[in-house]
Image (cartoon, rainbow over all chains, first blue to last red; front, side):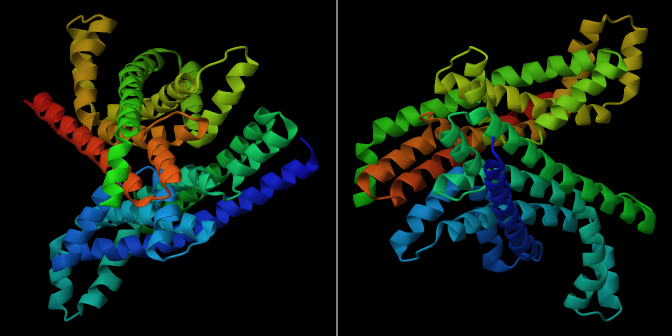
Amino acid sequence: MTAAAYLTLLYGAGTTMALSIAAIAVGLPLGLLMALARWRRLPIANGLVKVYISVMRPTPMITLCLFVFFVLPTVGLDLSPMHAALLALVLSTAAFNCEIWRAGMASISIDQLEAGAAFGMSDWQTFRRIVLPQLWRVSLGPLVSEMTLLIKVTPAVSVIGIVDITRAASRIGAQTYQPLPAFIAATVIYTLIIAIVVKVQRLLEGRIAQRYGYVAS
Amino acid sequence: MNGLAIVWDAKDIFFSGALTTLALIGVCLALSIPMAMLAYMFLSESPTPLAKFGRLTADSLRCVPFLLFAYLVYYGLPELGLRLEPFAAGLFTLVFYNTAYFFEIFRTQAQAIPPETRVAAEAFGFSRIKLYQRIVFPQLLSAAAPMLGNQAIMVMKDSALLMIITVEDITFAANFVSANQFSPFAPFVLAMVLYWLFSLSIDLTVSRLNRNFTK
């Protein structure tokens, strides 16, 4: 493999990272909102979110990408491949994040909420001061696992023409007639990215354990 | 109406696609769960360095995206002189990759088994094989059932990626029909409905098994 090939791969890595980070940045709060809707049993939203998650859980990312990319233009929503990929990733990761946030909320006892209300806190204050500080600590581990899963499904977006690490590798393979070295290099890059994410999680967990005296799992 | 007609005309493609996906899931589960059980048994009985090596292998496999691994197998095996059909190569990838995940599930769930049961079995003079067969695995399988179900759904989602190495599964069928008829909506909705139905039946099977185990 030439230096130019490595550069192509690195460029693809930039795309993969940008897509993953954007999807996480949108998917985390969106999941939290949906989890709140289910937690507070908001009349219509609760049912909608339930159906949405039940559909998203079994849908493969590649099917979702093709669906978003080909079907949305037929209803007048023209998306560039990049936007379509981002939308597909967000749709999927938000559903899983919602379930993680919801499990975290279930671990917070009703007594605490009642105590908040007894002290005259509004719902928002109770959420911000009592629920959220505990919630993110409990949810951190599963959320990071979901992030690594997200990074691992990003190769699916290469099917709608995005030059991420995977597509860069298959291009190099097609040019040099030697696909194997390119794919091995790509695998190494993915492994490095995921290893770094897991390492950051371990560091954060260590900080939490130091500060609050227990390990969030 | 138009969409329904298109899907109806292509029912044969969808039917064989659904069969392919089902075959991939079924064979993968039937092979990788027992292989993961064997690996778990073998590695918990082997000396520490070997067990560590096994864990490291499984861990690093879990860092690799499935599609990349499929490419590595698809292009790598011919270099070793083994030329496989796309379906066989895909199935091999699916089984090998998911064995690592099932192994990890067994390893973490094993911590939930009370150690006393093993000690008691040893005191009763159970042989190693009988110990796993009668004491460890029944508890392990029932503790791990929900996670095994989740992983089975992951197997299904992974199997869709194999269309890229031209395995003709459900997603391939949807893409094929949509490209030929210039009408993407109905084929992709049908594909998603099929996946959704498969996942419902996996969930149902897991809850059935769980009830049987806890009886």
